[in-house]
Image (cartoon, rainbow, N blue to C red; front, top):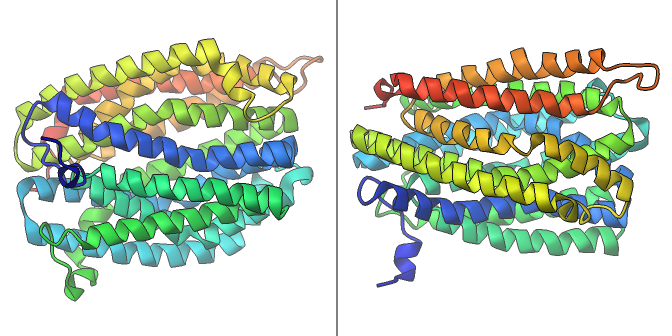
Length: 459
């Protein structure tokens, strides 16, 4: 019989049919990821419609820098999520309690450090990526407000990650949906009503994310049947901190390198002028939605693998890996077809400029088939990470991004330069991304089949 209380309760993924557990866990998380993507999408739609295409370009140019500054939280969130899943699967209450307490303290310290760094780092980074003068101040104002309110974003993602590690992907969804509605209302009020421009959408996002973080904290504090809330657990422990850093650092490094690569590519993108910058924003917003199922399945596979590795059920991990990956590929194939058939309709939500939509759709067709490859990468990487091997996905990401994507983007761009196209063909930026995705899927599949991840559990 359906039970609302059961729906919002943590889920033990070490029993039952694997694919059903994975799908039931993924669905609410997918909706949550889509809602989170709405933050950036609504920002883009509002500034594009009410301020103009240059404001849209400003929001997009800020994204690689914002992602770079988030690497500390990416590491903490990844390490914490893996540890929570494994300790929950192993029924080790005290270790679970210490992990949760330590992660909350680490997040507070990281927030303070990052706010201090961002004060002096934003302007130089905007200069590094050759941000056009016409949008420079808009980019700076947008980033500065986001970074001053970074604690809200950090705590939502880390506390939401803890809830998902416990098998509860529904609570984080509900809280995020509430925050999304608040964000949309505030976006329109600040930009259309108060004429605050891109600063208005940044402020709306900070307020909404802080509310979702508070709701996650309230939910977590109610789960005392699963772990204990004691003062000593919030004091940083060498053992727990070491585990969080060991598991999370590779992902944090990957994010940092990926963001640096994006900054280099953004610099190349900026050389084509405001039109391609704005097109890239639209593409990345549509891309964000297309990627959501892949990221959701990846996170679900991490939790599934973490709990089952913690319970020493490796046969179950392999069965779930095959089932989950096949489902993810099926969903990605469907999304690819939708983009190819109806992508231009989606893009008109961001701008009324037909030339901009045509340019965006031309580039989007290059990327579309790559989402199927990313489905394989995310699902199998999720399994590998959940087992405690975060190094292998890191090396694969570094190779495909640093060795393949960036040199290929600049190399192809150079080879396509002509007197008529002195900056080269813009398609080269997206071709290089597609090639890195395809190679990443192949390398991840090989790493999964080798099976070295089976010996990386915490227990």
